[in-house]
Length: 456
Image 1 (cartoon, rainbow, N blue to C red):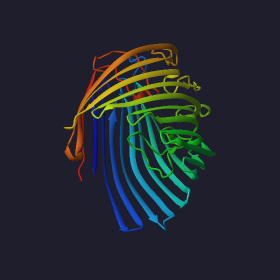
Image 2: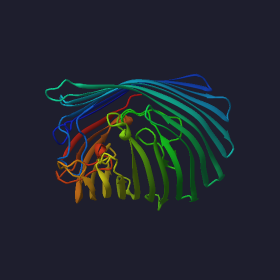
Image 3: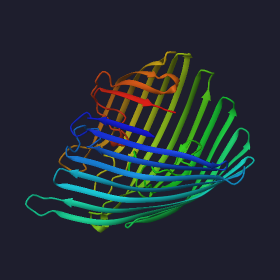
Image 4: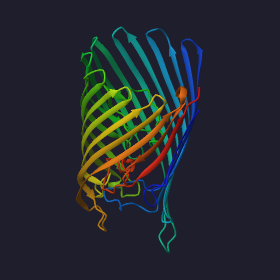
């Protein structure tokens, strides 16, 4: 059994959130070659406008969003032999999403989701074959209500059915003890009331260990995503591999997102106490914005998102009780402007550079102390907070932040307690993350207490 709760009043008006997740899980092994699983999961999520745009005054003071979801998942694994195994996953979910903006606007979306996935794993020497099929559907009953002063409400009710089919095959080959090659393909089809799309997408990845201290990873692949997931708190399990050579291929996004990624990474152990690495990736995503309230010719609008990221890291343990890390991150992000003139994430171009430096002390008694200072530099073209919809303006900022934390690990790994102070100096700045609703920085001091308890 597990329980997660996060609550915050936010850093401005209507920036509060209350997130609750509970799950119960049981695993049963009726025979040596058979495993069964059953999981219940419940989500309650309510929040205001979480977006932190480059102009922090650009937010909706009335928007409220609520989500409820209850799901049941059944999983099974059966080993036919030492070389062949069958996996199966069956999920059923009932949920509801509600959005309101005062008394003027209300949107409700009750939904029912079901998904079935099966995968066959065949192991033969240095070759492992994964083949699978996944089928999922979601039925939405949507009601939208507009209220204008002095007029009766305008109510629009629509039904939508999303269907997703995936057929895939992956081959993992070790042609040499130091090389692992992943090759595969997936045929994916997405269908809704407004659009139908399908694609056959290749997958290729390689991991090479030229020495016992060095690993080189490279991957290139395409994917078509039509996730049944409704929020980050409510991920839907999948049996298909989510990464190729360490690069993620399944992201949280919209229906029928086409994406293509090319990535290269090098990880190297300089010594038993020093590690360094570099990773670079290039991802382009073509997504569709669906607006059922717009005229028919504007209900589907295409947007292309570009992502160019590089990350270098250095980890050093000068002493058994000390740990130091330094990371240099650079990202360039672009977004085309749809026909309605409003960029998807409130920017058309965005460059973010980060340099966090962190030092931690570990006491034999379980006490942990840490400090982190980060230099952030950002510039881009953002949607301006002006009466003109979609107006763009350039913006830039650079600043240093200081974070501190103290933690205590309970004996026998029973849990972890920690007190965290992010933006300890209460620094004000202008910053927008790639996804403004999932920002990693807050422009005021944030004190939080966190605890994790574990029971056997």
